[in-house]
Length: 315
Image (cartoon, rainbow, N blue to C red):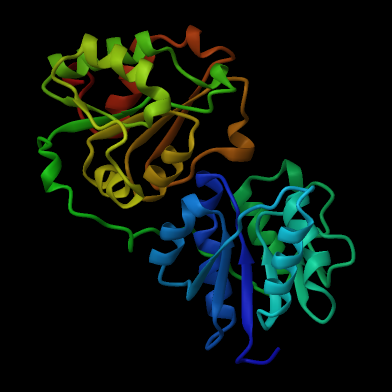
């Protein structure tokens, strides 16, 4: 490969997958010294990739619909004119594999697109955790070592949030179409009351989509700090580094908090399998029940105390 050529990394969506792609991207950067690394992503994650020191440029994929031929033609022109010698498709979806046909011949491709030069040829790849799957994909493309994702470069000034020294993050959100992945708001509310009684301030994190659940928690624990809709990715990582503990459902922000080093307790139901998608980090623990409505507050409180390193009676 020409050392001056560009390489393209495709990672289009899902915050958890984006966070877990930072290890592979660092491996790609090391494998191609002096080469421009371009990331193709969707708009919500563009600034996050722009902040990453291993990325030189970010392209926005507007995700043309199948019935929009002019947009597909424009995307094809851009891909073919990009001067890419190799593409690493870390999304490995039907959409991203279709881009292999758009970019045309003469470009090396790592992914699962039929006919690509460096296929991830493991029929069991869908039964692997994302981190191991992507590392194996890169090994089959000639990159021997993939480091664990690192977001130490992602930081923000959060003094303006006015938080006390001792706080615990609560992340009660999750995909709206998968309510089974959420611990009940009433359980979070009870946990928040217990935290407040022990001198720990609950800090509520989420988007407007979780407004109803967060309002219920805030009503039960009036001393909680409500940061709904007020934190970007960098602020979230910084909050995680300073928190005494974090409790949340299997949702994207928990991936970022885990990699940032926060002491995370993540609640799983039968609706998702931690063997395939669990958050990874230096201080992560998983609690799982078939139905999260059956997960008692006492169990969460005890696990949180242990992972947070403070006595259970002070939780």
